[in-house]
Image (cartoon, rainbow, N blue to C red; front, side, top):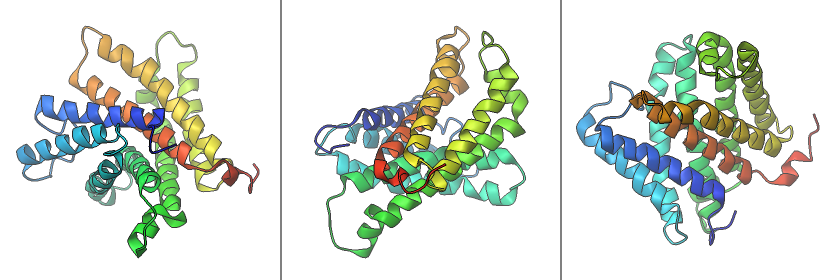
Length: 258
């Protein structure tokens, strides 16, 4: 990726964040995206919508992209952290892991973009964020999230099967296969087994989900608010996976073989 000309992955990620921000503006609340216990929701929804909309727009332009990345990463990390209390309160409920994983992918992508766009500077924090340790955090956030995605396909198999298009044969088999695919991609990223390929495969799979599951849902005459939110979130997560895949050097897959 280059800073002067945004890579398609960054453009797609920016559009996904802008879509989420637009939904917040339109619906006037967190559209199923933030925990119900968050205080001052009427005011914070406007702030969150602004971060997503204007931060995403900033990623589209060379001059504003570094600033936008610096603004977006703390926001995305905070959004991830707000979902963690539910996980600690009920770790046995897999959907809590899934909820953290969804936003953690966005945070990982935001971190990868900040590392890419930040100029080389001294300072422990800057060097941590942009250096090898920071990039390792990106891969841990991303890979662990994919494990949660995979487990959810098995834990909530009935709900996953319901999302598989009716025209596909062996719908339950597809639900299991995609769950295994999430899990394999997560392990590949975490264990450095062809991590770039694993991340790219995950991005492609998520993009296919967005197209075959959520586009038909939003173009349906009975399209719901939930469908629009899931479409925007699925788009942003798929684009975020693409960003993370692009941040992994090709040479990093040479040290470990499957």
